[in-house]
Image (cartoon, rainbow, N blue to C red; front, side):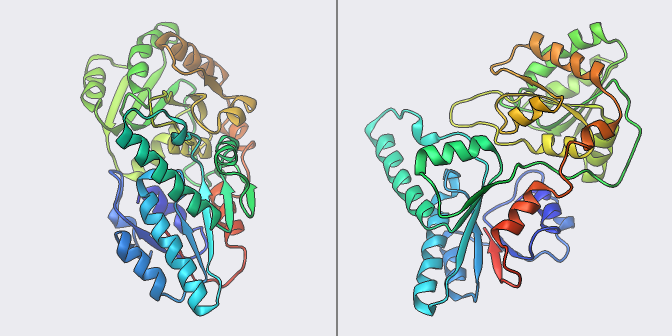
Length: 350
């Protein structure tokens, strides 16, 4: 569970949210009237068996960390349907664009675990009624691995324009928002920034986040006047930074077993009219490249990242230039409405 999930749930079809744990950026003060239930595998399945539900949304099958839990919930939903003779509709929102089953495993034990997980994932996939794909890469990944689902629709995970906090953007203002880690390419940004400032002396970098490289971010801010760092501020400050920034940077890098699905900072940056510098790792890479953003190859060098940031600074214009390319309805909200198109259903998100 993340704070962004709580914020977005206000616009989704009303549902109880069953979760296993919370992320580092979870803000309990925003829970409000949301119905949250903390449950492990068995409790989650039991809730399905005893609750008068008509529809559930489960984690996507390629989210392997929760695969066993998802399978138990799916089994419980199907068991309830059999006993009550009332179909419980199962939907999922899929944005995973890395087929981890295609990765070679070394050792008999790991190979066996892979085969067991693959069987479980296929079991889940075949019992899902509706799949909303958030990116074309995710759609391609799932169709190649599991085949066509019963019903599916591609709805890009693009945000609607933010309608509040309209602050005039400084053309040379650059923002890094998110996990301060190697896989997010934050080390590349640290190396690239001196080159950016050498070419565009008025450029300013705001770093917001937390992670293994937080101390490097703080040291850089102390040593370089053009850099400011805030470690894990509240959401109000994050929104303010997004509104102020002209350029958002998220140079995600490939590592074994992980690939950037979409990138929440990218989605939030777009909603506030930021021009984006990222890599082909995100599932939105093609759309971004076609709509005036900078998409770099990965692995990425600090030199290429610096050039990309300078290009974005030079191309920055009115925020409306970016906002006009976005849908009027948030893509995740549109996907939710399609997954649960029948009004009045009682349902749960997992």
